[in-house]
Image (cartoon, rainbow, N blue to C red; front, side, top):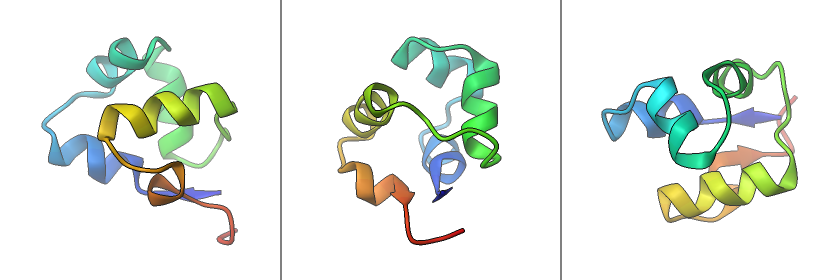
Length: 65
């Protein structure tokens, strides 16, 4: 599932570690999601959307492979 998480994170000036702390996961999890190596749980997707004040679909594109 494609996403623009790294762009959103960088636009806010956050490191992977800072974003991970804000949503309650490890830096490695954020790295894996950004690199499309891990599809986040629904709970994490909601936390990321809430952090960036957008919808889940704004971050993740389920149509892209």
